[in-house]
Image (tube, rainbow, N blue to C red; front, side):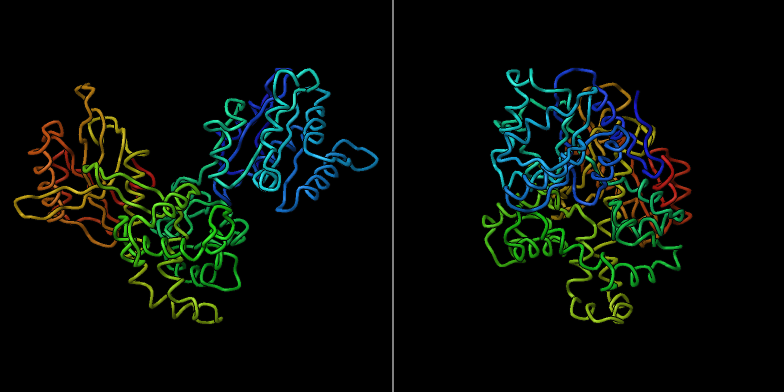
Length: 493
C-alpha cells in the first residue's frame, strides 16, 4: 500500500509515487535508488517525508573527514536502532554491512543524503556499496531500500554511468526538477499572470525561494511587485540577496569561481555563442570549452542547438536568479550592500531588467508553452521539439531570429519532421500586423528552402502587452494565425 503524500507537500505527485513504489518493493534482496536534482528543489523534504511515513532511516552527510563521517553515521544508525551506545565503525565496509541488516521486519528505507560529501572523503564508497549489493553478499542482507541523494549534478550523473561501480545496480533513478512556470505561479499563490511571469523571471521554479528564503513573502499583485523586489531580493538582510553567489560556491566542480562568474555574466549580457562569450572575456574560444562544459554539467547553463542551422547553438543560463544577479545586482553590488539603496538601484535598472532579463525569459516561457502546454490543434500536429533559431535571408543579405520554432508530425501522418509553427515573442510590445508580416516573410524563406515545412506552417504571436485590433481580426479569419497572451500562456492551450 502506497503511503499518503504529506498534506504540506506541493505537487511532486510523480516523485512521491516513484519513491513509495520503490520503498514498497516486496523483494527480499537489498535494492538501490539514486535521487538527484539542483539545489533547493525539495529533495531532502521529499526523502524526509518518505522516511517518516515508512519508519525508515535517514542520514544527512556533512563536508568532513572520513573518520568524522563514520563517527556521525555510527551515532545516527545506533540512535535509529535504539542501541545503548554509538557504533564505532573503523571503515565504510563495516558501516554499509551493518546498514544492510536493518530491515528485519520487511522492506525498510535507508537514505544517505548529500552522498557526494561522503564520496569525496571516501572515494571507494561507491565500490563498497556495489560489493554489498552483489549476489555473494545478499545472503547476509535484509530488504533495505537504499537511497543515495545529492545535488552535485555532475557527480550524481556519473554515479550510474559508463564503467562506474554502481552502473546497472539501481532500481530507481529519480531527478527532482524545478517547478514548471505554471506550477510555480500556484506555489507562490500568484493569480495575476503578469505578476507571475515577472516573479518567475527572477526566482524561477525553485521551491525553497518562497519557503525558506522569503518565508512566504510573495508579490500581492502588479502594484506590489517593485516593492517585493526591493524588500525580498535586493535587500542585503534577506537570503536571496547572496544566493546566486552561493550557488557557484557550493558546487564542488567549480574551482575557479571568478572565471565561472565571468562566463555567466557574458551569457547574461546577451552573448549566446562561444565566440561572443570569448570576446566578452578577452579569451580564445577554445579556452572556454572546459568552463562551459562544467557549467552545463552542474545545471547552471543549457546548450541549445539552433532550430534551423546545425552548425550553430546557443548557451543560456538555466537558473533565472543567476541571470538577474549578473544583469541587475552584480553591476550595482557596492550600492546594494549599503542598506537603503535598493529602491534607487531598482529604479535605474528597469531598462536592463526588461531587455536582459524579462525579454529573454519571456521567450523561454513561450517555448515551454509551445512544447508542453499548447494543444495539438494549435499547430495542426503534435510537437516533438521546440527551439529558437536563425533563418537566412540571402536576397536581403541578412538573417532573421525566430523565438519559437515548433517541429513535429502533421495531420497527414507523415513520419518526416515538419515545421509546424514559427513564433515571435514580445514582452512589452503591443503586437500588430507588422509582426505578422515578418513571420510570413520568414515562413516564405523556409518554404523556398524546405518544402516539407509547407505553406501551412502556423504563425504564432506571443505578447505580454496584447495585440492590435487589426491583428486580432486577421487571426479570427485565418486559422494559421495564433495569438498567445499572458492569460493563455498561464491557463490556456
